[in-house]
Structure formats: structure tokens, C-alpha cells
Length: 542
Image 1 (tube, rainbow, N blue to C red):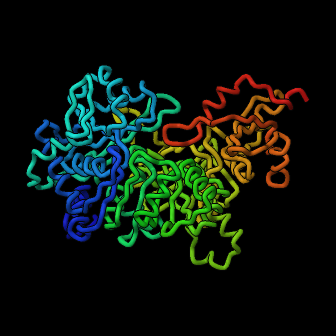
Image 2: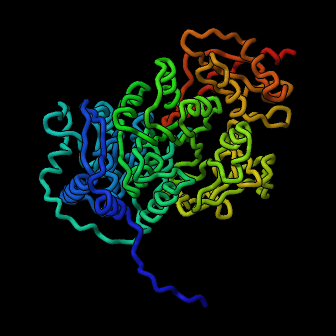
Image 3: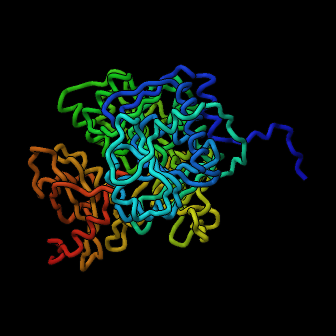
């Protein structure tokens, strides 16, 4: 029989993060570009007072512990207040991705049983279009002041008026750390979105781990701007891990174009940021076209989809360290980060680059393995690739309102195909549904795309499978050229010679004006496959 320790049993609660920020970093700034068009500044101390008032307001509206409050909002201080106010009182903060289709939005709100929905001015048309289809919502809270309240055919509550009516004299309740804290839905590319219901315990542990030096490396010395939206897996946990360490926090609001993001970086002295590759494409184009440099920006974490090596090199050339990361909504989301170890110091730049192109090793709190089609463990040799499975302190056990568990013998199947080397560095070779099976052999669409992205005329490239009468499937490249660039099919295919195995070279190239993206900024290959489903490859007649 084990002996019990004699330590305090204080529960891990999200409210403790904002309390810590106020006690030790109370005067540090939170800066937000607002939908109203101006820039807002206040301190962690002022933030916590408003969070307390907001919690009182929700209590007055009748929100009870366990009930869901939805948000349709950009990255900003009011959204941050909802994160802490709703979860802190024991209710559940449900962030909703406004980039989803209307039917999906209505499905999510109904499935979550949101009691109230808080929204930014930008999203009023979405709110007005969906209100009649979600009768369970008791009220709609516009996140602005009375001076900017919009005219609408539906009754709206004013966020600032609700706050102004309260005293802020509020004591955070103490409850079970396994209580639900927030709810995020998957993007639903293969059916209805599914809900991942996080706990206070899982969120606090995720915040601790993500702030570690070899994870995201957040520090009170930093100025951190999350470009990744707060409606996309809670901005990868940064709204929690940044206050936890007391760093200055900068929110970009609705303007995410390259010029706007660059200006904010320079004005606020941003040192660290996070976002998906498509966001950095716009920033890099602006910087390179105008021959600019970064004054303070030195680190960025890139995830959501694999970061092309060409993008890593371009950012490195601007003195920006790229931290490749991987995770999922079902993982809160952080699973791995890629940083070099001491033993890598003596490697050549090319060898270091090869490591940094991987998604990296699991951070403490996440365990992972790769298995073959029969579920047998595969070796960590950097060559064998199979289905990636994970488990951990902030990985879901089941989906919200689902009676069936997705787990396989206690492990969550990610849907990714990966390799893991002897040092534990994992590399995604493809999504299981995107891998190209040619003549019984697998071709990594990600590797093909990475080579294509190196071509100076390519803005974006997607590799998809096309039916082939002999080989079953063959790769085809879909390319968006850079503005004003010239590139032929033959030039593109020749560019692959010597860079990949001959049989990996795509059978054809199609040029398009744009590649469809998912609600989280990833390339929507499902739609591309539908678009080209009847296409016949030139090699099919050979």
C-alpha cells in the first residue's frame, strides 16, 4: 500500500493564472487593436478588475457553473476577459470559429447549448443570419461600448454597459480542477465538427508546459503577439501561458495582413509570435517587397500545418528563429516543438536545418508512438513511418456529448502519418487521408509541396492524388504563382529533378488563382480532390 504525501490539495484553476499576473506583473501591458479602429492599452491589474466585473455580469444574467458562453471574436482584450471571466466562475468558454460555414456555426452553437454569445462588431452579419436558427441562445452581447453599438433588427446587449454596472468586488470560487473550462470544436472537414472539452487541470498543465524554455520559451522579458486566432484552439494556449509568465501581450484584432502585422510588431517591440504558415506568407511578402527588417522580432512558433523549409530559411535570413510545432484541437493543442539540443552544436548548418524541419520532440505531458496497419509499434529510426498515436495530460478521452471513445487501447489516433528518430524527433510525412499510394508505395505530399515551395515563382503549392489506371494513384501538383511570375508546367517538373526520388515527381501540374483553405488556414485538399476528381493525367495513356 502506497503512503500518501502531506502536500496542500489546492486545485489547478484558470483563475489562479490571472491572479498570479496581477500580483507579480500587475503593471505590465496588454495592447489591443480594436474593431472600432483604435488601439487600446491597459495593465494586467486593470484587466483583472474588468474580468471580475464581467463575471458578476454573467452571474446577474443567470449563467450557472457548467453552462456554455460562446464567443465570435478576434484577438483582443475583451476576448481575453471572457476567457478568464467565464472559466473563472465555473462556466465554460466556447470559442467559435467564424470562418466555418453557416450550417456548421448553427450546428456548433446548438450542440454546445450556448446560453449567451459575445461577438465583435465585425461579425454582426453572421449573428443576424444565424440568430433565428439557434433559439436556445438567451442573448447576444456586442463587444463594444454604447457609442459604437450597431443598429440591428435583433435585440443586443452592450458588453461595456454590462461591465460598468458591476463593482468588481468578487472572490474567485474554488471547485474541482477537473471541471470543464473551455470548449473548442474541430474544423469539421470530414463531417460535423466535434467538441473537445478541456478542464481547468488540463489547461493549467498545458500552460506550464508550453511556457518551458524548450517548448515555446515564454518569459516576462518577452513581448508576445499571438497571430493565431483565439477562436483557433484558444490561440494555442498563449492567452494562458503569456499571463502565467507576465509577458507584455499584444493583440492584432481583425487586421492580419502583412503590412498591419509588421507595423504592430515594430510599434510595440514584439519579440515573439505564433501563427500558421499562410499568415507568415503575407508578412514575408510585405517585408521582402519593401526591403524591410525586424527591429525586435526574433522568434516565432509555426504550426497548424507543416512549415515549408523555404519559409524557415526566409525567416532565418531575417534573424527570426522558427520553432516548428505540432498539435491538434484534441490536444489543447500543443504536442511537440522542435529545438536543437547541446549535442547538435557541432553539426553543420545543413544538418541542423534538417532537424529543425521536423515537428520535434514531445513536450513533457505528451507521450507518442507510431504503429503499422495492424497496430504494432514501429521503431524510432527516422525511417519507418506509420500512424501517429498520442496520450497525455491534456489529450481528450472522448468528444463532447459522445458516448463512444476514439481511443485505441488508451491512445488517441491523430490521423497523421509520421516518423520518429532515435532522439525522439517526430516528423509528419502526411495526413493519413492525404498520403499518395502509388503502386503499393507511399509518397509524402508534404515533401513534394516543400520542394515546390522552394521555386522562386511559387506562392503556394498543394500535392494531391489523382487516379491512375496502372499505379492506382499518382501525384499532381496544384500551384499558385507569385504575382507577375512566369512558370510553365515543364519548368516546374524539371525543378524536382535530383531533389526527390524520380517516381515521386508529379505526373502533372495545374496552375490556379487560389488554393482553398480550411477555417484554420490549412490547404483544403479534400476540395481540390473533388475539383479534379474527373481529371485524366497525361501519363494515364502511356
